[in-house]
Amino acid sequence: PDNVLMSWGHDDYMYLVAKQNNTTLPSAALFIIRYHSFYALHRAGAYMYLMNEEDRENLKWLQIFNKYDLYSKSKVRIDVDKVKPYYLSLIDKYSPAKLRW
Image (tube, rainbow, N blue to C red; front, side, top):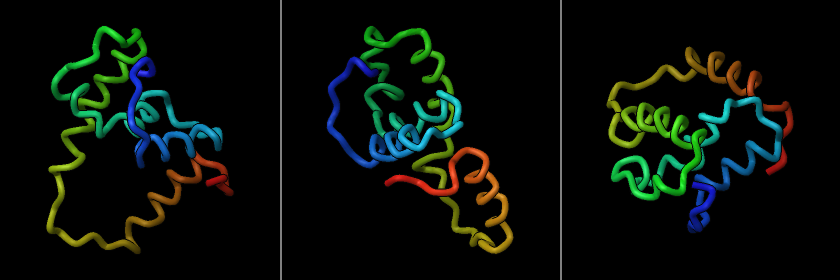
C-alpha cells in the first residue's frame, strides 16, 4: 500500500515514530500499526493490485490482528499493576529507552 496516497492520521504517526526510533518490531507489526484502520484494504480487498509480495504477507497478519482490534473490547476490568510489567518488558524489547516524538 505504499503506492496509495492516503490521508495522514494517528496510524501513520505511530508508524513513523516507531520507524524513526529504530524499533525492532517485525515488518508485519509495523504494517499493522500503519494500516489497521485502512478497512478498504483489509476488509474489502481494495488496492491489492498495488501491493508487493511483502505487503500481501503482512496483510495476512493484519487480518488476524483485526479480530482483536476494534470490536473485541471487554467489560472485564484489568488489574493494571499485574499486567504492567509484561507490557513494559515489550516496550523495552522493541523500543529504545528514550523516544523521539
